[in-house]
Length: 313
Image (cartoon, rainbow, N blue to C red; front, side):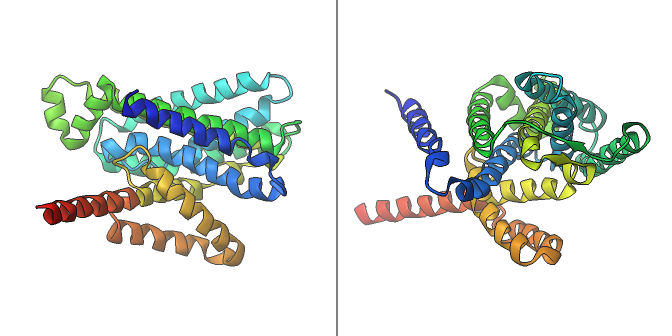
């Protein structure tokens, strides 16, 4: 049995333990904390799959998430729930493909600017449509889906995201995207379809974010545009991924868990200062731990091994 197989068996064992969280005493309190955390792990990891190797900072997470949320809200009374999740994934992937086709062939700065405004653009369109044709600005979501069901779905989704990321890293697409991240000119001269590779990876990120939005919709009961397309989500996901580190698949996990816990405390105690504190957190991550927690841990590990080799020498 090789090391990779052992690692995946360990991961599956951990997931098996986590699946029992809804059976704990005071499960409602645990789930209210761990559901958002699991959501952020899925979003930050899928975000890093694209932004890590390409170095393109995407701020479109809220747009994909909101699209998935509204697909679930509009179709829950007429379409089977599993089919709605599939539709949300396809819609997120198609939207990402359109955005990528329009921006990823250009300089990275155009991509960042466009993704920053995408959620607001879609929010305004949805608001206008609902005000003029829907009769109300929001949608009610009545289902028998419980908090435990949502948690189990998010847990399964994070496992799928990690597995897809593992496959991508070992595929020709992963190899191509690493060359693109190093130097796009070299990648083009190597025969790599640069735009196509970036769009394909961006579609994975968009599909995951849309499915997360669809899964979370029943948790809020009432969906309205300002909540579904909240730009704060895009920045939080980016900060979590950067905090954890982008050069390792498990890096965003190391950032999502502590930041989600800290953010719960901040939102509860300093609700008027969240935007300011988020900006300060972003600056602190960029200036003080640019390689993230994963980078710091690997640096410590290298120093420890070097010291051990010196001692043995």
